[in-house]
Image 1: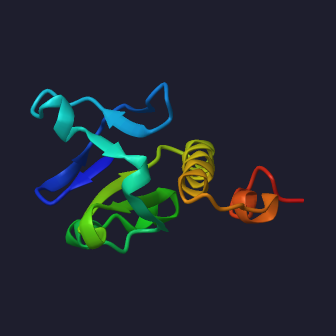
Image 2: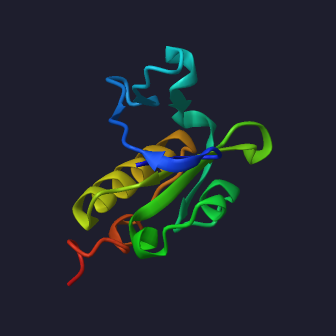
Length: 122
């Protein structure tokens, strides 16, 4: 689910571009260039529902499946998403974390990368 400033969240299909530099989604109401986040512009991956968009229309029962990409000049924009289940949440958060650290030219330990994932806990 993609959350917006304008009310109820809506279902969108997201995918990583082939070069792993962009997160794209499809919307009949937007131009292609307005339905993309350049991943090298992401400054934070924020878990939960803490951004103004989420606070505007909270779904507390789905907070554990929600996250935001904070991006743009001085973190001025967010892409606020809720996954359908824990598997999808783990998949996206782990993958996006790996890409995020790659663009920052930083190492991330396996524990830090997979620590929140219920699938990879001992």
